[in-house]
Image (tube, rainbow, N blue to C red; front, side):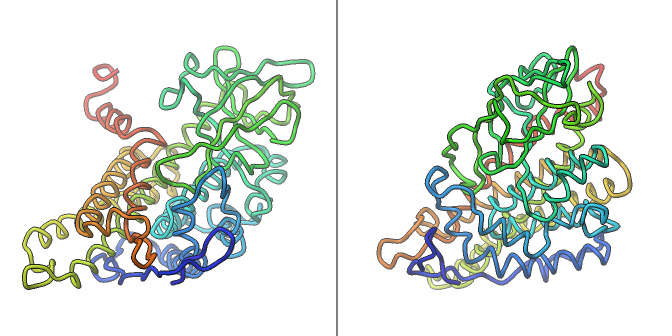
Length: 420
């Protein structure tokens, strides 16, 4: 695979895709045949379209390279944004849309967690939120989102409110006026915001919270400078500011005061997606490490004949398989009509992101010096695993920090009267 720069020029050096260990170690007894077919379809698309640009995205500069439009357009061209949605808005109308969406995220994250995150926010967060709106809202905003004609964003986090989305913590507010609503506030860490046609915004209305569809091209809406992050360089995030933004009544999503429910439903679904992304990254790091341990010789034999690496990789294979089962089970429960598929969603997010971080760290250790470089000076070959190390950490933080997932599980174990 040739690595391509942001301007389309080939970079010297290649990245070779290792054998897929999961194809012989993991037997999927959970996914319906429909979902197995989607996995195969997405894998083919990601291999052909995302692999050649993944290294460029992983090493980019958010403020210089910006949004990876070529990756987004490739997903749209191959119809991947249709997977989560019904035929009435141009979607595939699958029987198991959440499960198919989750495996899509895993397959994308195998090559680029940035691209998986773009898909996640576009479809699972923004798209899923609008999917709960009126028929008119769904046709106006969801249909072009499904077609990839526009980009969606989702805004709950603020400088002082992220995991805590209580009405007291959220400072962005909308006041009713004679012509709809006037929105003021600031949102932070908003993925896709620099190119989004609309942002689904959680705002305080009176004593409660409501959600609004906010077009980004109307007066009073502005997007700040892109953040420079440790990893996920292609997942462009920036603040979104609202200064006396006038919204007509039709921009209210759902009922007034019902915004927290919409946001939490989207975030619960999102946790399944983040768990799946963690599995994708973990599997990729595992595959690269397994291949390296088999061919790297030291002390009169391959590293793979050392018991340390044998036992560690056996443990990691087991953990990845368990994390994959958890996200599939959570997604299948969501498809069955369970709006908040707990405890599986919390477990999937917790274990999927943990194994991603653990396996990424092990990959860097196994590769030694080669694991720590972005590009080798001797021949310009790209570092094989350093992006996993940088990209994996955010999974333990966003969509509800892992400590929040443990709190959710503790509540189910001990009850809210004890845990709070």
